[in-house]
Amino acid sequence: MKLWISVAALVLTATAARAEVTDATPGGFQVRHEVEIAAPAARVWAALVQPSTWWDSRHTWSGSAANLSLAPASGGCFCERLPDGGSVLHMSTVNASPNQKLVLFGALGPLQSSGAAGHLSFGLADTAGKTTLTVTYDVGGYMKGGLNAIAAPVDGVIGQQVARLKRQVETGNP
Image 1 (cartoon, rainbow, N blue to C red):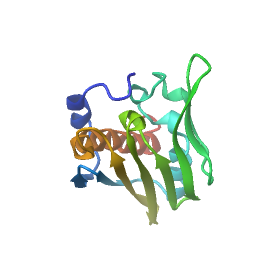
Image 2 (cartoon, rainbow, N blue to C red):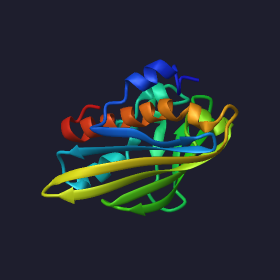
Image 3 (cartoon, rainbow, N blue to C red):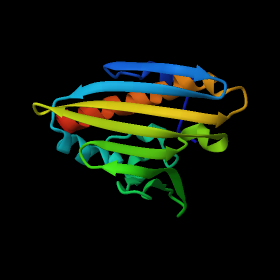
């Protein structure tokens, strides 16, 4: 699995404008990233729901972000096709308000093999043609050793994805 290569590499890749682990306990954590994107919310939304164009391939099970898809409607799937005909359900869509809010439920990376899950929320606020994107990932449940031990690496991965989404929207290249 290439999804979470090393803790050190993940922590070093967080590059959002404002990022932090806002809370971390053995039973759960929250990470939060906020960034301004030089584009209207409709353009940010259009990119957001196409993770194959901005998600880092190093953080997939298949090794290729081209295998990712996201159905932005309640009950939809943030899924990945695997080369052998298999698939991965990363998260399910629980709230989709185009150009405003997307909330996904599930577990990313190593959290999938624990008793933990969370809500990954993307909030978009459009002001004068620029969008403030606020991303939070609230995770709770059980993981051997405590979820607080993985909060910083998860924060690093989420931060990397937020930075890639911003670059994709602004430059066309993540």
